Length: 624
Image 1 (cartoon, one colour):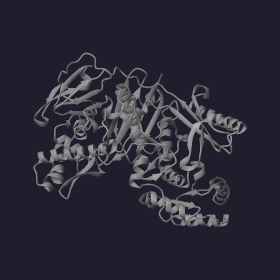
Image 2: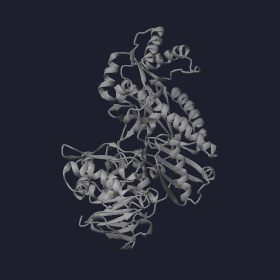
Image 3: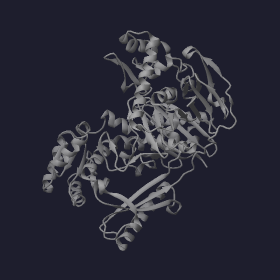
């Protein structure tokens, strides 16, 4: 087999994890927010260096069987409200009020006053309403009508609007019809799904098609695959923009479920600490909770979403003092200018600066030695923004900032997990391992697992995603004739879709379901169990599994003392261990540090680590 490459594009760093059937190779590069294609190609170049193919980018790309990609661009666009100005046409004022009530700030940012009601309007009046919204600055329009005939009326208006505003003309305003995007969903969920999808579509389309074009120039074998927030992957042309929202955290959740199942954890929490946010997930019986209908910042959508909440606390989060209390975020320094110690123009204090001053991070080995850190700039930032406002010395400021950061994440874990105990905490992301023990102590957790690929764990998790397609067709009744006709139509659609991915439908797993009920009452049942007089949708789910990364033994085998690499001066002096130099069964008691190319795990006093057969770090509190 050729290479399987998985890339997770974060706000600060872009992670790469590749598998060739035998070994796993990983790399990282700094995200380039001005042009995400640049960090995509830089990441592939970094991967080439790890594989001994430096300077041979075309040869590397030509050897890739499949490239799966996720990005935070959609999530960041929603958070920062950066996107096109939308116009919304609805049937009545009640739809507007309901949508506004769910997420007022988001509604104002996406649509504002660019709204028109067209319940009993003639075609000429609808066309005039569109012209009015365009005059108000709308560059994309969403049409979402109410009532049982919504799909039929939207279809009729489509013909009239396309006749009045031909799509082939330059400057034509794109139209999105809600019943096309989310058939069968409630009016409110169709409004929000359509608004968010229209908001994300232009930037996602531009970037992903540009990226695919760049890859084709280097003779890629297969189309770029987009990892979606439902845990599956599809090619760019078969992905809606809304499915890219929060896809990176879903990759981490997929990896966490795989790894925790390997170790037998039933109820556990994962923390994915990146540069801007900490993504949390609670797993019951080894599975992350998934909502049948998800929410985006309180806005109800018509598609499932895993329950992976985020808090504004990451390695690049700005630390400040407000009313005598250290505040973590919500603003982040991102990749540019980055933390003060990056020496790229940032002057605010961040957790990265704090950990550098604490001696947990090595200024020379950080980021694989490719990003030297500036100690003096970090001191100036922490002294100016934390020590002086609190009237304490630098060492006290460092301790106070670490305590405040850990308390914020631990508090979020307590709110998510409730009073019931947890088997373990999985800590990953570039900043997760260095804070894991402190956070676990404050959250009352006695066992922590730091994956071997913690620094690129979302990219690692993407490596377990299949190619997945979903197709549906409405039926007025589930009679044998209607079901057979729908199945023939859906099989034809699915066959074409999977052929475009490079696979035959007969080589895929298929699952037939019936979706019955309307709006939020809609639910799936096996097709054979539905009575013939019910109405709803025939649904075909198609999955094509791909080769995935193999896992080593969960046990550590024979235990022995880990050989130290050196001693770091942090916190009065701590032994330092290099993970790549340790064999399964190697262990030591904290305080100590375990360093990998792209992460540092800080083992606190009272904790003991051991290297498992899968080369992960299992860290447990002594006496627990």
